[in-house]
Image (cartoon, rainbow, N blue to C red):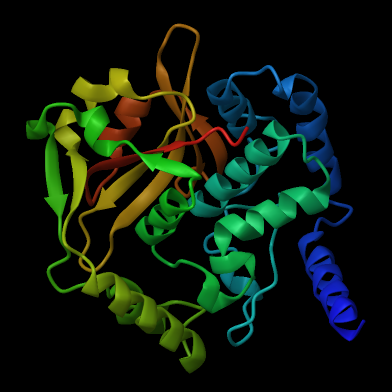
Length: 294
């Protein structure tokens, strides 16, 4: 009986933690679910991803730099599941969590928030140290979990379109800039978490293939709506500079749904290839394709 009560307490605590949408966020969540859920069972997965990424309840939301860091206290961090502001990574996480839960018919706020926690944190348990602070690490964990497939090499086709990223001095961008980062400055606990992640990533860095920036136009016909496209950084100690969701117009033109720091909001950039060429300090891209959870 004691064991059963303990288990009930844990489940109840997680459910309370996961159901974090406040009254301000619920109308946006309900609008997305009410629009997409009725046809989700028969809707093509790429179409559902695209419809989620471009839903009016997300488009126009304000850009916020590092929105998760504001809530960290020591190494604790509550789950932030709202719709009041995104950076590029939290926007992608939100789109994936919404699309995956809607696809399988799990459409309560708690369903969505629990899926978001599983995507964002190791073992689905919120905490600063459980969050992947480098996007490549996050993406590779999603590949291992069956959420994504990395399709960089298949999209590239000809090996001549590929190059390999190896961080000469390892992953150290965050720790090297700790004094300039609100979440890390004056926080030895969080600095220790980041340093541990950086050491592990550096130890297993044996080179990561990416599509050269000069080859993206030539291979763009291999991209699909819903693909996650991540720009490889030409910055010491950093792997990924930016990420967004590929969308396509009926005429086939590729666009990018993203949380844009430059524009200060979530938006659809109307020409993916032109946008890709405008990003500075980037070498090329990696491409990840979300798996249909159904």
